[in-house]
Amino acid sequence: MDVFTLYVGQGELVAVRAGDEAIVIDAHMPDCDEVTPEQIQKSLDAYLSNKKVRGLILTGLDKDHAHPAGVEYILAKYEPDWVMYPKCYKDTDMASGVFDIIAKHEKRRAKTSHPLARKSVRVDRVDSRNLTDLATYFTFELFSPHMDDMDSSNNSSIVLKLTGLDQTGFSYLITGDTETERWNSINRFFGKSLPSPVMSAPHHGSSNGLNPRTLLLVEPHTVLISAGLDNSYEHPDGAAIQAYRLVAKRVFCTNAFPGGTCFFTRRVGDDYQTIPVEHLASAAATAS
Image: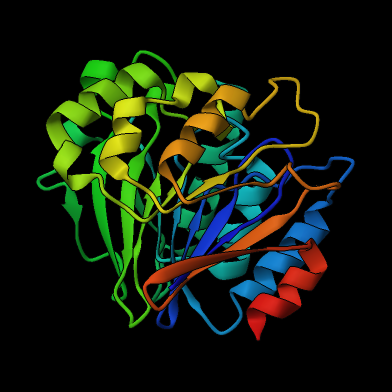
């Protein structure tokens, strides 16, 4: 198993491989000064070469996680078995556009041997938090969203532990834009299930996504932060980075390098290794 965190400006797009399968998480694919959609696509294509993309997880429906251009490319190029998103209603042009794209591909594949399935999830509306029949080489443990705390689009984010089942498998905690108050509830109900050696930093490393108790419960070895260069939100927050470094052995941020960088993370024996890779170079490196 390994995790590829792509630099996509101020947003998030991650792919994970295990065995002969892959999962794509989020779909920000912008035009910005440092990277083009074509560069992102080439890097993603090389990483996913010869892998079956089982699903696309959209942690939220804001454009930094579910950009229509990214959703269109992933559904058209890789034809995943399913697309997962939070069971919430948000009437915006961006969300409407994303659902129009999903509906288009659902209709296109409806009469084929490989239809596109929708997985709309909420903790209080699933039979089990351990979501089944989604992949062979991955397990999926759902922690959020829950109706009680869906007071904003951020707190409607999917939080899910993705675990690879191949020989080098480990757990990767997907966190979306979940904020501190929602983490309080997750800690209370699911704290014993949160430990994971690798996690994405909630809300691009912002202070309002940091929950010290969550961090102690997860006890990550590696924290991966997706944020854009010179972004107007000043993500990641310096105090949040300091807190992550007090608990995790290694903390990496995509905007900490000139021009931005991608990260390739894998388990090496009992340790975890993360290496920075530029977009086009990373494509060749991770495909080998």
